[in-house]
Image 1 (spheres, helix red, strand yellow):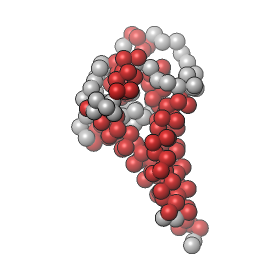
Image 2: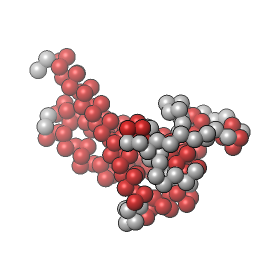
Image 3: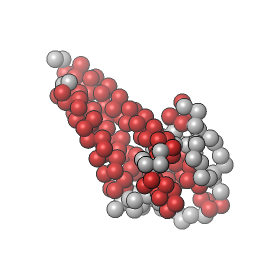
Length: 167
């Protein structure tokens, strides 16, 4: 196969896996808010209002998605690698973004409003389900803008993007 076509396929499969992973994350978070059995641990997360650390969040996202992450290898080797890496990269990005929103939400420059942060801050059980991205909240009508930048956030000491709880 032409190397250019392989490269295009890899990019496409990577992007689809990344986007689909964000969609699954959005719906799983919504499900945790309506299912008593699935959401038990999540309700404890809301009570504590803290992340577990980037590494533990990452492991929580990767473990249940291990089979779908490798399923594409049965289709084609290049698609499998791209799919695996797209899913893995989204899990890493989401784990980082989740922890960042709990510890330093003003650093979430890629969103107008850090949706997961306001989800917790204002006890939003029916709005702002995205962890790393707000796309699906906009698409499915669960995005609820609020004035979130208050004195509490502006008076936090300046910290870098990597100054987070990692484990």
